[in-house]
Length: 160
Image 1: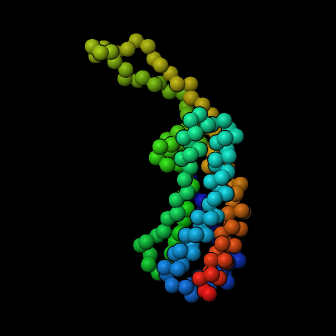
Image 2: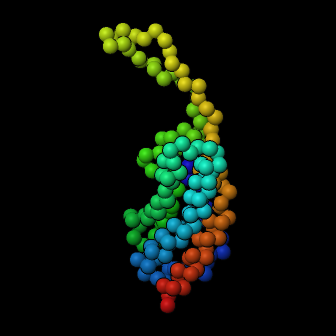
Image 3: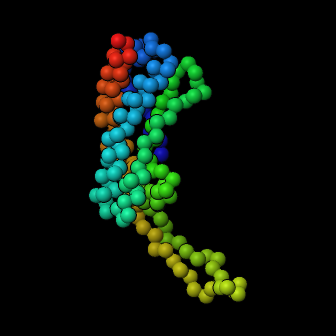
């Protein structure tokens, strides 16, 4: 799932940012996006704990923030953040977020001699327990606020 949004009222910051060289713009934007993503990461970790989804701790320990830069466009930096799970837990997080329909666990089960198994083993499925979607929606205002303040402070530091 992806959320794109434009922040109004940043014209002065945008103008100041454009006056910096591209390497500094990249550093400033990456810092702002990384800092702004932290409330979402904290909320995701809290939801995992609050919903009782911690069994080994692997899911909560695998929450990641990855800041990406569009390196193709050399004139303007397009920076984004992905809050999600690392490879170790991504499949489990997907199932939790969207739920699982009841399904057969052994559809092609065979015995050692190659004959088919007579019984069917069913997974009962489970309802979704959203983690990421509500965290993104509920922290939107805080993310924008942090991005604005970090951008302003970083631009001021870069200008001096």
